[in-house]
Image (cartoon, rainbow, N blue to C red; front, side, top):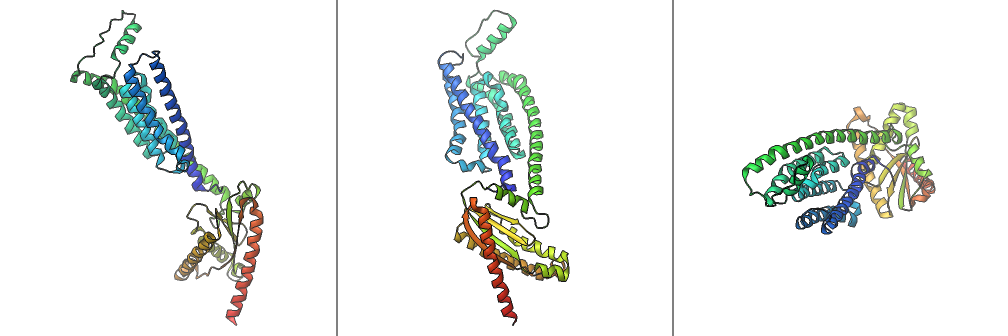
Length: 384
């Protein structure tokens, strides 16, 4: 409902990439199933048993994160999900290259493409290591397990040179010399290819991180109050103009006590300090998601709590009072920086639908004003 800097960060680095990753995983499952069907029909020249194993393992592996995210869509914002997805991509790449070697060469880069979605250096390192391990291990395992279609490779070479096709259908016995040749003539070039793509991956990550940081910076510049660090009045007006939810919200309206007296007696710098320290008390209770603080006027602040009820608002007010007391103690203990300032704010709250936000603000303002009058009367009684 409120597009905070954290929600922008999660949207760009977790939610959106996870959505695209799910699409790619689904396409992988469909493509592998399609190739499997064509092999069963005798259209593809791949050993049927090898294809059954080589397709079922990647399909099962790719379905694991798909099923998890389908059953628990809230996990799309969980930072751990991307590691599950890239790990699945590494296993898919390894299985395909071991069991369907020559038909799956490009799948060596499969984990790297997934890592590019997330703009994460740590994930990029994991994908690079996984791709290189798959590159080094899969040809050797394919040779040792006998899953390489060596006759097909020979056939393609002979057809390409115009020579007569004469094949030895029996695989050569496993020995060290072929393994060394595989490492030298097949693994090494592929490792170089993966290394080049990895350098591109980290450049993409650097550009992507800069993009996300710029988006967050622009959001702050356009929606944050320079003096207090709270959301500004312009952003609150945007919310008033487009209330797009029926969700229950709580509005707590605050007004700083004594700002005019502070400005008149000690100057506007002192008044600005008072505003900043009062705003600090609100920022310190906005650490959790779904709680947002605004400066909507000169000395008027507002807390918006998503999915609020009366008990939650009272608990938040109790927390705020404790924070305000701590800030006032800090003000007294550090007279140089805080000049012994005393922060006091009147408050009033209401609960209702987000679609009635403007009306809720007026109601909370009226309750705050009654609270302000009561506080003045109490101070007057204490001085007499």
